[in-house]
Length: 484
Image (cartoon, rainbow, N blue to C red):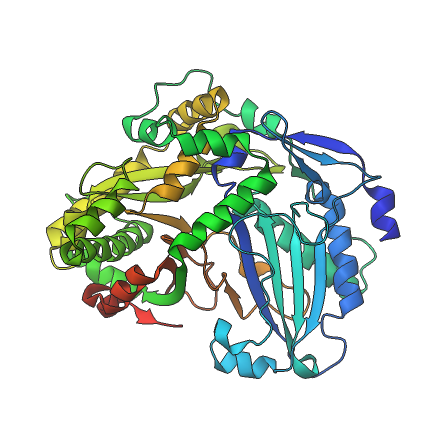
């Protein structure tokens, strides 16, 4: 701790619109590590904490205060740090017990997660912590569950991954007795991102205009609120439609079979195109069945909450990393770790998506909509979004639409985070899992274990009625297997 306090410097990081696109959510993962040979020196507590503090020196922004003035700032004051939440617990069960249960959340009497899906103030000091850590040590030191969370205000998934890899690297060096730690540099100054934007940009696309330029009363309210109050409001709002979370496995063989069956005008479809369409179909089919079975009053009441959409419309909102598509950012030797996520909307109809499970033509058309949206994400597209984000509080309006629109699915692909590279000295994690439930109508393609390259783990967090529909969906059940 003394070394950390000595080396950290006071500084301020101005936030921008990109940081607020996903600011309603946290980035929470739990890493499970097995003690390879029964010993007391497996990821020892003091060393783990010391390596954490050393890694934090390279990520000073995580010890800053979130200040709501103008667009917002992260203020790092070495005399008044917003120290991370770091706690350790002892579990009465063994690692082997959890492993046999396939890392099911219900198998653990002490839940590793200490936060919900939304950044909210800490119960200890009323501030939003920019990193939360909970080490759960299993019985007889047989393994640990390492929960780490960071809010999207400060980094995105790439930034999260960079910190975890650095922490693991530092811990491994300490364990092996290496005096010289490899030097790493990271960029947090938002000016780096701004300077990478194209100078000339076209008008915002029609689909993006609907996301960023549709004004709502809730959007204005959210933009006026402090981050702490905004978080509290969103947590309470999320309770209106309690989420149910499950994990499924989709093999690459199943994806290849679908690829061979669909009609796609000669366009090569990626695994992500097909997975996104599979997920969208499954959720949209739930809404289709709901509309068929609901009474007129109930159906009309629910549709009023989604007035942003046209009647019968459905939106798949894909989160995409803009770094590879910005030449100046992708060529940097020092990786930029601020918010670089854009929501890529794909508008479809509930009817077409509902039919996609039995109609290859409808599935192919839906896949092509996804592929077209991804292909259109270039520097000019990103520049137009950047110009819009700099001009207003449109991020709050897009957040309001994401919160209030029911006929949607948010899909994020986390397979390229490289989180299974986080070896603290005793081997790679055996499993990396999400929260038991997240925000409603959300799905993620989880980080991929290099030892299992035969398929993908898909996480869904949906309204309970929708989840019941997913579990009964014949197309989804045929092409995926239930994990827990």
